[in-house]
Amino acid sequence: MGWPDWWVGGDYDVARQILQRGVAALLVLAFAQVVSQFRPLLGSHGLLPVPAFAARVPFRTAPSLFHLRYSDRLAVVVGVVGAVLAAAVVVGLPQRGPWWVPTLVLLACWALYLSVVNVGQRFYGFGWESLLCEATFLVAWLGSDAEPVPWVGVVAARWLLFRLELGAGLIKWRGGHEWRDLTALDYHHETQPMPGPLSWHAHHLPRWWHRVEVVGNHVTQLGFPWLLLLPQPFPSVAGAVVVLTQGWLVLTGNFAWLNWAAIVLGAAMVSDGVWATLAGSASAVAAPPASSSFVVATALVGVLLLVLSWRPARNLVGPRQLMNASFEPLRLVNAYGAFGRVTRRREEVVLEGTAAARPGVEAVWREYLLRGKPCEPGRRPPQVAPWHLRLDWALWFVPLGAPSGWVVVLLRRLLEADPATLRLLREDPFGGAPPAWVRARLFRYRYTTRAERRATGDWWVREPVLVLVDPMRL
Image 1 (tube, rainbow, N blue to C red):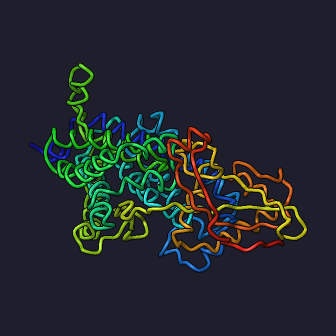
Image 2 (tube, rainbow, N blue to C red):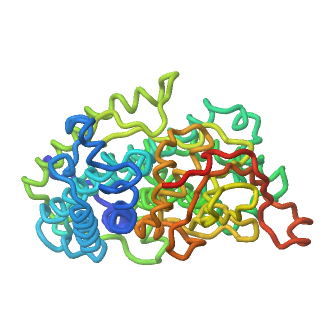
């Protein structure tokens, strides 16, 4: 048997389609957010301006196109070009050509999105950003329909899902005691960053069910990932479990595209034979012969990923496991994890303004309403994922002690009635006019009980805690 034969993954043509088109669909969403949110958050007049970041952080630390030149117009061009290239992969256009066509298209998407993430600071400091970068680089080397699926790509996808699931499981087990005493889900549905329409109902499920949820999480993330290291059909079983469990998380929360990325990876673990059995059709046809250039290119990429996997692998077994860490600036092989600790109470930043000449006791303060996070008690939490509301997420971290100097800049933009910033909000109480004063207060939120909900129709009860930023004016 020649080397092209053992190099061919075989039985994974459906998996390649799922990976390439699924990751590309997530890229379309991500680049659309660059177009709609990047300028007010990170633009020249943004909350954390990219030019200031690029001036103090060297290119070798955070390689980005924006180190060479930054303008708000260029950021929009990056978003539009990235979205168009990714959309082409979703509909399968590059896959019809030679192997290097989808490779170049997806590598361009990877370079463009890496340029965004590496200068995104607080607003791109999420594990799923590195996950999307890594997944994009990986699927770039799966080739076109004219080539067989490379075994290197199959193994790399399994290794990525293994780290994603096991890393999340280990960080929980090593983290807060609430994961070990099975009480984490008593709080999580209420205190998670962005609750969804069913989160209130999930929170009020019986406590014994929350214990079952935690045990199921441990089994899913600590046990089933090991099946990915075995021959089929065990990876298919592990992938199906990931799809089912991530589907539950989609129903009960809003975690941007994290759950959807895991679903794409999980579905790609299923072999063509299993898909054929489920569909009641014949097995896949024989794979086409592999071109020598494709074999050499993917073999070199495999060696690169193997070398870069040493530190993430050591991170999994080490006593000081890092969560959502990149070990090199290109974000090719990363460490993942989420919710090592679960907060027991929910505190939210509330932004307010007044038209009064003085911010005294007579002033009437009106609230700026955000799109996703809890604001008014009577509003049901919306479904926003897989869309990512970056301002809402960043505000959730402020009461937890995250750096928040940008909040003062945000208040200044509200005083200026900056149109780009106001478009990030759901409702401006001043209709586009500048207020005289603004402030930021901290409120404690909790879900209403069933009785309170029947009596008031509210989803939340909130009470003020303190003034986070004193009244300020231009």
